[in-house]
Length: 351
Image (cartoon, rainbow, N blue to C red; front, side):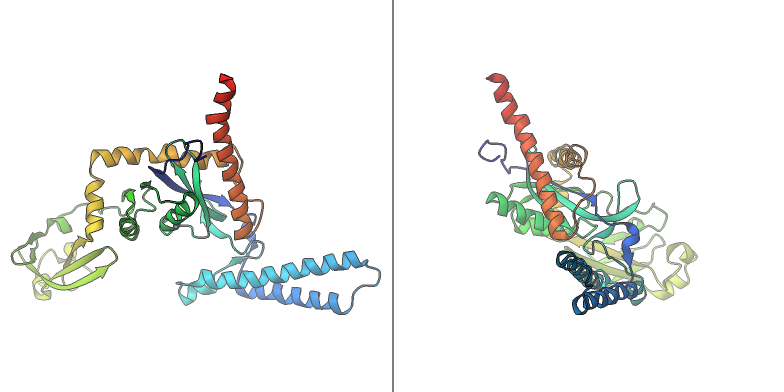
């Protein structure tokens, strides 16, 4: 595709889509049930090896052993995946955690119809010049925010260089990704829209508090002063916390409207990392907004083609490795079809 001039890497649009796994929702089991299945498989395998049935042929005996061994390995794999799923969960949540005994690598993910099903997150990078797929990955994570940097690495590995510009939706537009793209010197076009919905304005909204740079204080709508207390460091930003005196808030007639759950009102002033601040300013420009509008027709077109034309709405294989192979063949098929449409067919018609 590169030799035909169909790949330029001047702009790459990246997007993810959920593809259902070859596993039913009822195949997910808790740890106790998985261990029961594992014990049963171990006992069955031991019985087959120690006292094979005389009337059974050797070929059939080996097939039975192989099937039981695969089931045992699948239960062991399910237990290991269960531990991965439990990471970051509370003790109570961990007890309810389940893993699939059919495809342990799959995860329950939200679908486009707002339903949930065992799935994988297919990540596709599409060159904007002619809609050619330049990289793909399969993730077990339902969220997209951790998938942008790996996508950039795959593109560079496949094409020998990084794209000049990468465009992605709000699911990928995090401060971490903005800073990472800045370090990689790749122009990132994204959107914060939908990530943080603003609360409706009211008389004691944060925007009603007036900041005084000279004194480094805030003044509340009732004329009380909020003084600087501490700095809270976050990835890509710093929050400066200002708090009023408890005595001022306790005697205020509007306390129940302003800060009903705390002793005194506090306000946070956010200072973004320079790379984040530059990104936000860039996305206010007309040029950046026009570029972002091209994301859908490029990134979503390839995903829609793979699902509707090639039929990859559900994987036929199980396991992350095999699913990745199936996704690779689907994307290769897509690229061949685009080559036929763009190169072979026009040449045939001219001939």
